[in-house]
Length: 193
Image (cartoon, rainbow, N blue to C red):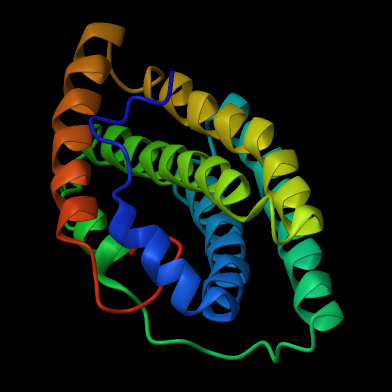
């Protein structure tokens, strides 16, 4: 369903255990960046009404999630602040081909993979912290459905720019690269480290 080639490694859960506060801060930034990505796609492909409609909904949901994470940070007395950006998104976006319509396909599929990885990580995180923080576990479980839906929406919209078999082949290629990136990990404690 999520088109991920590999599951997250236990190394990530060890990072979460070391600094959950920083993962929560990064999660807020991820929601903000997801809204920005959807808005940028509206700006880039404004003539595509279906894409614009779907992106508007995603912008609204991602900003709602941003506010929800900020509320959880506030409730826990965690100060929201800038963080150094991890390499995950940058490395994925470097795979985007420069010419259209390949660029549109890749931008949408990269966004889909980020949503898929977030979905997988939210589920993993909810399960991992359930015994010590049921409220936060419930919150992460509640996000699963929308992240999965966003993933599917991005894949479907890529088919506006290329035939389905072409999109699926490129999704497989990008997913293999995403697996390498996530396996490499990062020393920064991030939602996608």
